[in-house]
Image (cartoon, rainbow, N blue to C red; front, side, top):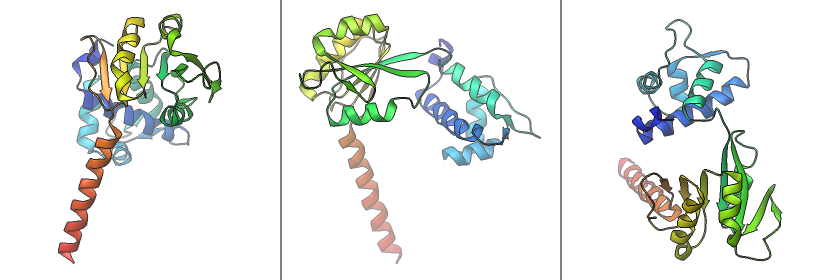
Length: 217
């Protein structure tokens, strides 16, 4: 995984999209795929696909394109999915439950191994196949499961403390849904996903496009 630190976050995101598209293609009878076909599936250009794949040392044939299974394996190995990555989720409210339902069994190498909550009605229950523990057990359970990734869906007021406890237990990657910028050590990667901000952006461009359409009519 040291090589991946030299690659930008945007390239990593696109590689993940390529892997997902290749998963879908490998389910059929197609054995090879050209850069323009993969580009169409992922909403990028063929030149961008070729540059991204060259950056991880993979090239295809001008006559046959890319071998789907070989490319999928190369991208998976580069992204670190040659081995299992264990994930914990903190906050089993409506959003947390929806995420558990989405993630469980979707990715064979990303395993949600535990959930945490302060609500006694959720503690010691199995929700969408994942056992929910008391927050007070977080350090122990995270360490015992050797979890590397934490998903935070707690209220804003509890997000920073939650992140600190996850990091203390050994987590080195955090997906944060709380509307707050987390302060973590430099070795920890944080991806902040503020749903309100994303929705506002979509609404802005929706309004902008609607205005343009009205002008052209």
